[in-house]
Length: 126
Image (cartoon, rainbow, N blue to C red; front, side):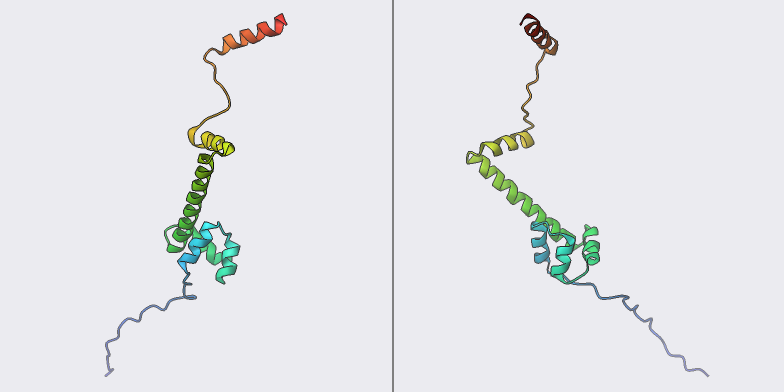
């Protein structure tokens, strides 16, 4: 008779290399400076494909840290622009007015035909 032993199912072995662990504060710093994939790969000692794969999944911690860093950079830049405008930088005031307030240099006339008639008379009578 065959000795029957109870066998437990074996846990599946992980395939491939173990996933790399990244310092998320460092990744956030990369996002702040909008570092390229190749720059991050060089400094994190991994392949560009590893960076690309981590950035592609917007729900993982790596991608979130990068996006958080970039959002912080945009806030800092916006703050600097506002401070510049409020301290009297006319160029920055105009730029912010155009981009945030929708201001333009063009004047819109209510009666464009009347304006054309006046322009025509001016040219003809001159």
